Image 1: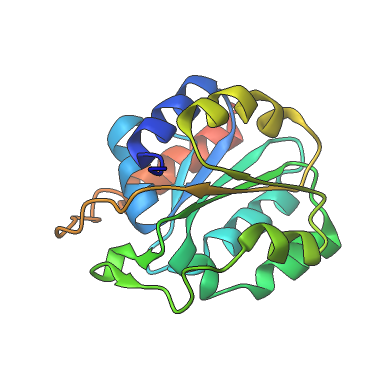
Image 2: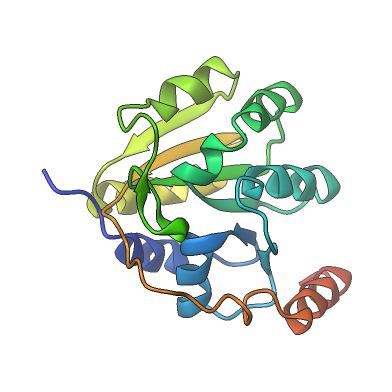
Length: 190
């Protein structure tokens, strides 16, 4: 069985995003930025492995707003400890999608150390109550509304195909104007 195409999954997500803060890093963040320009996107410079930590911080600081993290498997492996913290503090407004293609895609597609890693079991063991693995776009479409509305934290491992490995220009993602737009949107209650 083939895995999902990340861009197809992100297009599904885009149809369900309204006023959530979407946190993205590296390849998944880059792809998200390419399909939806919005003030409530949050991208962090040099944050490989820290998407979940940034999302947790935003979830705790802004409990009235849903926070959606778009993470990669390589990034999560660099910061597995954050899952334990998420499980302990249990922010109800946090949804963490991990796009698993078994590689450090942003660094040239090198394989992760153990492609058989079971992120669902790790997240559940860390104390996260809502945990799932999603293998098809149809399954994602079927469950996305529930994952975005239930009290979290919620963790979903998205099994995807390897993405494009060419050089990406991240400078637009990390521009000062994006940060300013996010600050203004939050101040305005957007």
